Image 1: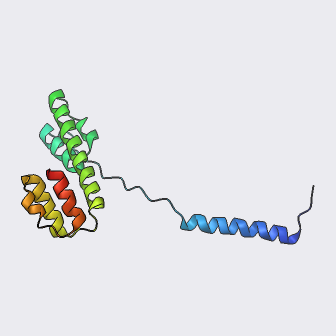
Image 2 (image 1 turned 30 degrees about the vertical axis):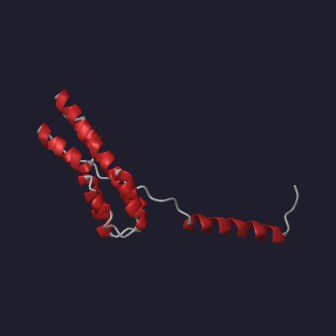
Image 3 (image 1 turned 135 degrees about the horizontal axis):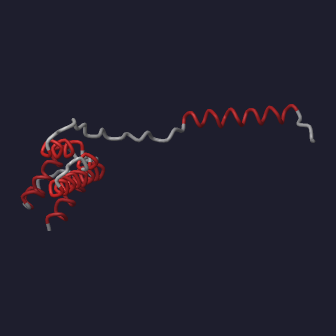
Length: 134
């Protein structure tokens, strides 16, 4: 077996310490799990649908015994999840726009009114508004 010199051991120890310190500072992002709907035993189907919708929790829908209502619940919750995802995409895409511009964009999209797009100050948001309405 080859003998390591004292400075080689020091370098190896230093490398291990540096890697350890880097691992402390470079942590992966924590995944924040949304709270699940808390459904008491014996709850009505309507109550379950309401709680599942508010928490966007499809697993709560599985507690509904009536198949038609269960499927309705899955559809409603799925719509809510898609809506939240779309809202998050819009928030990221329009990060630089003012809240007034975002409100005008939303109102223009709901009413399909291009005159509201003209009132938007942020050029990127204004272009997005016109592209969406046309």
